[in-house]
Length: 328
Image (cartoon, rainbow, N blue to C red):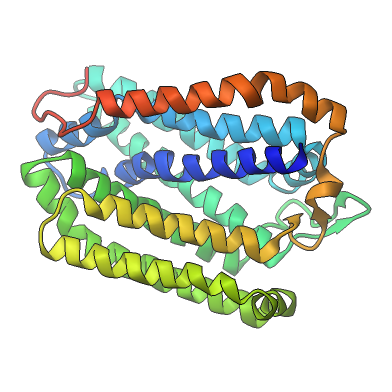
């Protein structure tokens, strides 16, 4: 049961990173110079799926709260401020998404709010991951790092890095779903964004190995982890080739593969810890009876149905998005 639920948690987080990642990326790219027609087309590419994508964040939170309550309480104590800012950003972008379609003179306000909400949510997610990698202060199961214990130069760097990563996902999504000026503009943005993301991943990798001897020892003991950087390098090469040959379908797939590789590197580098070198998976898990009880509800029915719903939804809305009129 413990392995089942930690696997579901990992899958939920990964799905969220990929799905909500690209529409957060589109939100950030929305702030670059674009005409009104192009902005409407950008929104049309994500309008059928954006709110469903955010559901996976709720799924991950519910699984952590119910299956791993110790980790939930410890991390929420450490991340009150970034979690609140992230949620406010998600709320703001949701309101802006809908209000912008109805506004006339105030449309620019909601456009700016859409960019701001997307950027705030993305940045805080990256900052929290960076704080986890760098290490948080706990004592006897209680967070002791203070209100801003999560804030450091490294966590800020990780926040910026995830913004670039989401923006890259968003650009690749626009290449696959857009046409004309939107697609061409997004394709021109990919090289710079990809360079920034790969440089960020390399910097984080080197920092983690040089500053945390325990992580370095894990890579020595587990040489199979090297397969993930190799996969990222291969995906980057295919990404570059697909951009040069103006292929619309492969860029998003390759960037998604880079995200999967980065996620696998992070997860397996700290295995079996849920909070690095503080709490293991077994220590964090709820009683077996609770995990077994939840299995018959969310584990056996809700989660598979959500996957089926997402698969059907993306199939129904496959193909290029229409341009011109806004999503309303």
